[in-house]
Structures are given as C-alpha cells and as structure tokens.
Length: 274
Image 1 (tube, rainbow, N blue to C red):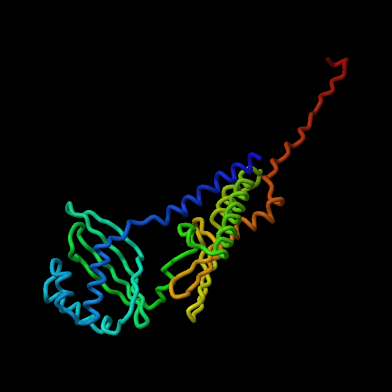
Image 2: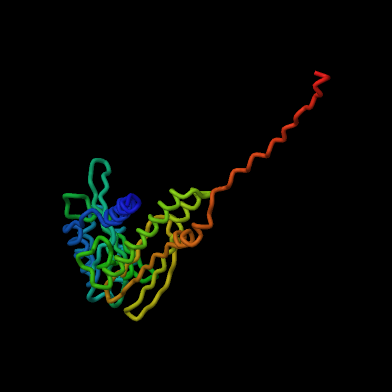
C-alpha cells in the first residue's frame, strides 16, 4: 500500500510539469492588429500604409529594401490564417517590448512572421519574414495535449490515458529498483527514467511523416490535432523500464566474499616437558 501511495504521489509531479508547459504570455490584440494590417498592406502593394506601421523603427530606404525583397512573397497570398507560435515580453532601457511569432498559412504560402512592438504604442518596432522549407502545420497544435484537454476527442483521451499508465509504470519500476538490493542501482534508475524513445507519426492533408527521438525528460503519448486536418500521433516507449522489468529478478547485489576459514594450529607439548 505504501508503494502504491508513493507511485501516485510521484505521478503528480510530471503531470503538473506537463500542464505548466502550456503557459505562455498572452498575445497582444494590438500587436496582432498591426501584423494583420502589415500583411494586408503588403498583399495589395500598399507601400504607404506598410511603411507607416514601421516608420518609427526604420528609414524609408531600409523599408524599400525590405519591400523589394518580400513583395513577390506577399503578392501571391490571398486568403490566409494567422496562428500564434510563441509570445514573449522583454524589458530594455526601461521600456517593455512585446514579441509574437506568428505562422501564416495560406494555400499559396507558409510563412513565419516575427512582430515586435513597444508596449503602449501602436507602431511596429520590428517585423521579420521567413520562408521555411518544412511543413509548418505540424507545429500548430489545436487539441490533444495536456493543456488542451477541454478540446480533446475520444481517441485523444485514450492516448493520454495510456500515457498516464506508462508514466505510472516508469515510476513503479524506479521505486522497485530503489528498494531492491542490486548492483549498479544508480545506473539502472537512470536507465528507467531516461531510457525513453518517442515515435511520431504525422498524417492527413495528403502527407505522411515518421520520426523518432530519445527523450531525456518525461514525454507522453498523445494524439494531437493540427490545422488543415493534419494529425500527429506521439507514442512514448519506456524502453529502460521494460528492460528492467524483465531483468529485475536476475539482478542481485554482489555477494560479499566469504571469510576464509582460519586454520587453528594447536601446539602439543607432552606433560613431562611442561
């Protein structure tokens, strides 16, 4: 019973850690509005409006160089959607700057937009554009993670349930190893906690991809829904814990060498010689 309570208590630690990973700085509505206005102006070639959004942070010549380089990129974009990839705030010289990295998805282009703004203003202090070669849709998670449980579907609940059982199994094996008298105990515990392989399958939207990684911290099994009908299945395999489970009864602490039997030599002295 004590071992079960210990497992359940330790199980809360990685789950709280995974949940806290979802916390980010809230997106600024003002910064999103400025970014949308910039994209729309670049889309239709409205250089006057586009420059007015960044005039406080660059010269006309610098903007002209930027526009010349990226004009062909934006002119082919029609309908698009903006998704927040990362947000942050930074203080510099007594001023607070908001920064958001957006992913722009359209049928024609996939772009990464990094927009910056001094807090309390309505002018962009930075605007960068990137054209990645890889599929950006797989980075936009919409449901299925620990932090989006309210949006999950039945199979996503099943995947997270399997993940809880896997983490419980890992902790059970780690506790069992800690209590068992075996050789190289620290190495076995490290193998149990760190020997995790994650297989990832992405499919849908006419594409399929496979990847694997060795996890040095807790990962978890999840069925994640992305935009545009793209789905990723992440399967956590606790290889180290499974290996220990099958070998644990064979592992024994080294037996201390038996003390050699000391030979006792008795001296016999005849009574008449004493």
